[in-house]
Length: 459
Image (cartoon, rainbow, N blue to C red; front, top):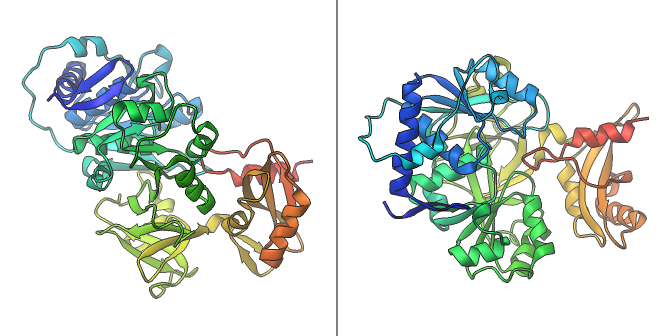
C-alpha cells in the first residue's frame, strides 16, 4: 500500500491511498445513479483527478470516453451524441455536451474519505477510444480492460518508474498509465517539480521516459542545461516515423537508450526497436511481440509469401474486433479477421518489422510508386535542414508530383538539397522544395500532408 503509484505536483500518491480514493469517487458516482453499462464522458483538467475518475468508472463497470478540452467543441459534441452519453464528468457547466447531464466529482472529499469495503466487481468495463488519423471523423472502438493493459509486462521490464510526458486524456497516454498501475509501477507526472526532464529523472530515479518524436528532438536543444540523464535511462517514442539519424543522435548526445514503438489504437503495441536495432535496421520498428500474427497482402487482397512487401495485417488477443458505428470502415480495415491499418511494409527473415509508409500517402508519378519516407530518409540530416515532410500535388499529365516541405535553419541551401535528392533518388526525387515555418501536425504528432498539398496549390 505504501508503494508510490503517482508522483505529482501535490506529492506522492501510494497504491493504498489510490485504491481508497478511487473507491470513494466510485461511491459518489453510484449515489448519482451510475452503474454497469452506463456511458460517461470525461472532461477533467487535472491529470490525477482524471486518473481517479477513469478508475472509478472501471470499478463501476461503465463505458467511458475522453472528451479533452484540447479537441474542438464540435468534435466533442459529436462524440457525446454518437455514444449517447448518460453524463459528462467535468468541472464546468460548459463541459456538458450532447444533452448529457453534468456530474461534478468531489475529489477533495474523496481524498479525505476513510477506507470502505469494496463492492464486488460488477462486470467488464469498456473504454471507448478513437483513431488518431489525420483526416475525417474519428473511428470509434470499445476496448476492454484486458485490451487496454495488454502486453503491460513488456514495458515494466524496461523500468517501473517512468516519466509520463503525454496527456492522460489521449489514448496512448491512458494506456501507459493503466499498464503501469496494473504492474505496480510508479508514474512521475511532468508537473512534479519545476525542473527539466533530466533533473526530474535524477531526482525520482526515473528509468524510462515517454515522449512524442518532436519533444524527443527538442531534448537535443536543451541538453546539458539541467545536467545529464541517469545511466541506463530509456527514452520511448512512437506515433510517427522516427528517422534513423534522430535515433542515433539522441543516443549519442543524451546517453539514453532510444526505443521506438510501433502499434495501432486497434491492436495496441506490436513491436519495439531497441538501441541495438537502429544501426542494423534504419527502417525497422523492432521484432513483432509473441502472440501477434502478421501477414502481408497485395493490392487485390491476395496473401503474399513471408518477407514480401505489401499491406500489413495483424491479429492478436489484445486487438478490438471492429468499430462501433461504421460498417464501411469495418469492411475496409478488418477483412477476414485481420486488422489492416493501411501501412505498407514487410517482415525480414530475422523477424524485424519494416514500415515503408502508408498506402494513402503513396504518390504515383506516372507509373512510379513513391513513399514520402523514401524522400525524407534521403533529405534528413542535410546541412541546415531542421525538419521535412514529402507530399504530392496533383498533375493532369503526370498524376502526382512529389514535393518536399522543409523547415530551414542557418546555412540551408535548397538548390543543394534538390541536387542531393536527385543524385540519390533519380526520378523519385522531389520536384520542388517548399519552405514552411513549421510542419502542420495533429495532436499525435502526425504530419498533415493534405494541409501541405492544399497550401502548395492555393492561389
